[in-house]
Length: 89
Picture 1 (cartoon, rainbow, N blue to C red):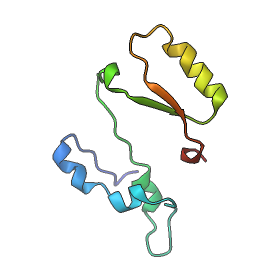
Picture 2 (spheres, rainbow, N blue to C red):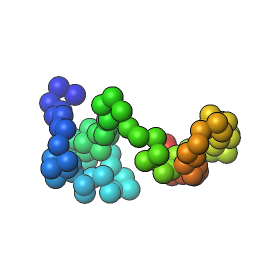
Picture 3 (cartoon, rainbow, N blue to C red):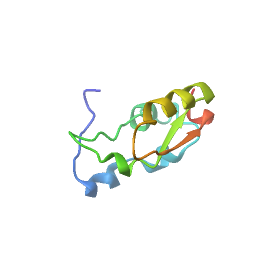
């Protein structure tokens, strides 16, 4: 989106619309036509993120869980794999 902003300081977390982030339903409404864009904001990590800090990997179903298990089988650090169907639509 042309009017999205990008931040790189943790002090800017207050600019996140936490009410929308916590909402179960976050589609746009007549009162607020920008909910989806704000909710779909991403936290991106530039260049490096320590793999041991990943504590869980959420997947849609058993099939994907088994695929992820194969991928991380050789890794020393193995995050917990959880099935979270409600996170996907």
